[in-house]
Length: 488
Image (tube, rainbow, N blue to C red; front, side, top):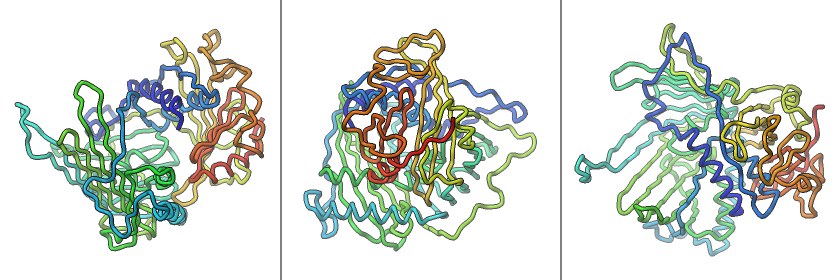
């Protein structure tokens, strides 16, 4: 990824981090609540910040559009990253099956893993896993002296469907759920005093927050992203074929790095991560992450002890609250609204770019949020995003269309222009017309400025940005070349 794009996203994400900081488990299960009879009006989200224009104008446009993706996915890229160098996994020894990245064998293994895991995930429709997550955190007393690590272990039974539906029961939550048809997450937890607390969050994009908490890791780790690093010769990565603790064939991928901090505290952090990915399902069935900062260790381990693919959601899904219960309600009811293509096009105010093989089971969602750009500290524009998601098992591809409508009378941000009432984060002459090296060569996006990077293709149509993502670079480009126009 170009350095300028990273910097632009980092600056935008810093603003978002201030507006909506990461929610910890403790905050998620806090006793802050309101009456079930009077749910509050969700606060309006405002993000302040203007992307810095990189050398490549199309990347600048993509960076600006990515504000929406940063907000929607709550993905925080922090500015001021420390200097970083990659090292082989700490304490690892070469074996006959884990080969140095300098040899073609390891690259071939990663390529084989991408194909095999992608196929397994596409074929998977549902699974239930019993997973135990152990966290070990350093502890000190009031004088600053070291204490034995604070260790917590939680076991949960988790059911996931390929449409995003989730149900869990166990130590972490008495029960929890995510219903993709309403973009709603719910849970019940038992406090230290034995009192059951209830929570409902609306407007979530997907189930990634509860899933990552329950598994202690993304159970569908991005093998393709790791493979790209391997193909580029990145050190610190190994892959081997093993038998997992479940007694099943698996891919074991290890990654290790050392980073140095330039802040006042200083110091060096060594991070080692190891994933065991079940070959039959593509699910991460064992995970270990160890971070050592100036000799102090923090560790997370996740272990799946049971795994079955013959499963269904329980009758209790999506879970309910007792009459009169106090429920902590939050979120934005308009965060992600499922709708038809015609409804989305009407909100978007123009035609939508839709894959030629669009099917009725594709998920179409719309998001609207107020944002601030330029020197304004108050919201001065409205972001509208339409996302089309196609799922095949536990794999997916997305087409995301984003536009920013500047308020009447609001100042146009520097290095930007307004085209048909929409903000384009480049001078007007660069928002239209395709350069000779555009990545897209056919379909409705042919002739629009576009760039391909990894498994993402970004195109610009005046004041609208189109971002296409798929499992691999080839799949993303094929999808981008298949676009049709639907709507007015």
